[in-house]
Image (cartoon, rainbow, N blue to C red; front, side, top):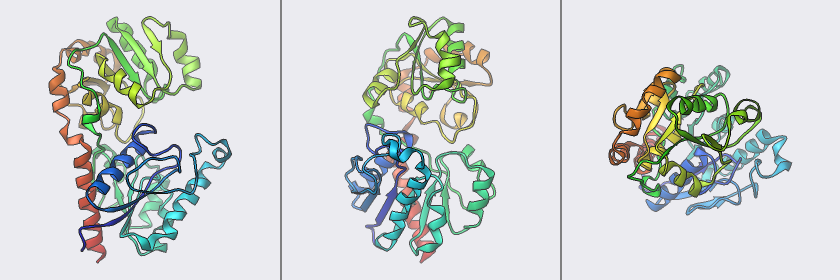
Length: 342
């Protein structure tokens, strides 16, 4: 088997895939494309035309459906058209690695090229049933918690998401505010973050996309003093916000596969205070990178201990979430899949 692989990376098309923009999925795919290319592989990134990458970029759509209203109404159809373009060229590649949710699954048996599916969200029972029909498909989970959702499937390895730790500014001195970063929804725990800040008497800065829940439940508490909302922030603003915070609040109310913002905060040296759900216990190391608790009141009581943590130690403890380890794991998996196929 040649050391140099021909790899197709398939990103979702909601937003551009580039280091300075997009959701966690686009940023992870961007890091994969850059490092695999750096290692000498022939990488083609299938993404929107306004993406930026060191790999060869191939695009069906100039812009994503979150930026092009013409695509929004039937965005799932456009995701399928985007993925179909990859499989029409499948013979050009040794392996196809899809990050586009479940849209690549129906094409699996139409090509000879093996397909790796990193499913970045929690699957429904119906989606699991569909994956069960394709036992040859290689699914990847992004945490042990996430892996538990695929219990009906065999051979589902866990590959933790990674970040470019060096790209995050380290702040040795603790700031004077708590930060909440993410969609301002009940699922993410926006209101619970306010409750924690109020209990400990600290200023809370909130950033992220706001919808109906924000306007009805959260906004009445935003006074510009103890609770401040600064809107959606780009990557440079995000990094500064995380680095200068005393701690990140992650009081999540619903299940999610990973929780990349916790790692991003830790990369800045900023400890995390989280509700113990989902993959939190896999990411936060109590007494080292933060604390977690079962409820808001208990978590609020842990804030002084969280603020007292050594920020040098916080950053130093997250090497397992470095993107190069992530790429090592995927590179190894590609070769395993190809060996099995041979």
